[in-house]
Amino acid sequence: MALTPSKMLSLGTKAPDFTLIDTVSGNFISLQDKKGSNGTVIMFICNHCPFVVHVNEGIVQLANDYQAKGIGFIAISSNDVENYPADAPDLMKTNAEQQQFSFPYLYDKTQEVAKAYDAACTPDFYIFDKDLALVYRGQLDDSRPNNGIPVTGNDMRTALDALLNEDEISEIQKPSIGCNIKWF
Image 1 (cartoon, rainbow, N blue to C red):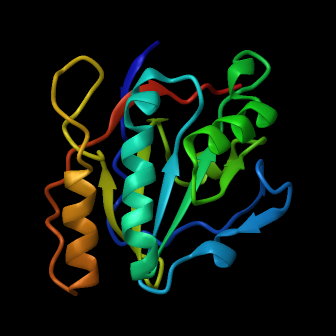
Image 2 (image 1 turned 30 degrees about the horizontal axis):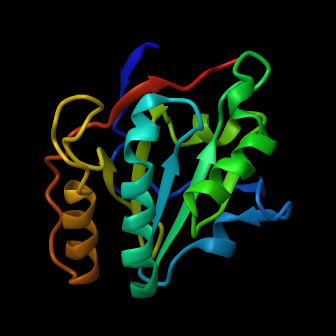
Image 3 (image 1 turned 60 degrees about the vertical axis):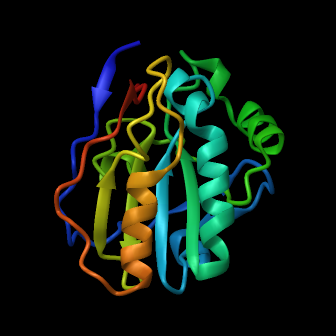
């Protein structure tokens, strides 16, 4: 496991469009299908990374708390499944069902979407406003496996609350850190 930080895509960047297969429903889903009326969270995650496993419950709670407020949530896995079979689409579906994801869990088979977002690690989080302009990228919170800090989602909650209240979102944002995306 290589410890990798987010690359921190430039704020204001427009969300690259995509259409990917949802591993739960089997349907193709686009960004336009699932963007929220007030904003959209894009998460690059996977099944096996201990950093993602550590925050799964927190991201489910975050989505459950903010979807009713018009925030869309989309999870994407871009890992090389040939060399990392634990991240295969059928196991993504099982994981999404076990974790009770209330959002689609999409498979980026070609890794083109991860490259378009300059995603580097799992988890890697992006918040876009209602016009799909990037307003936050970075960590969920300060919790990491074995550091004793509880998962609260505080960093993202602060950004989402500011977005919903039309307040300024601090440009001081900490990168997420986790396993590197498993490139081909």
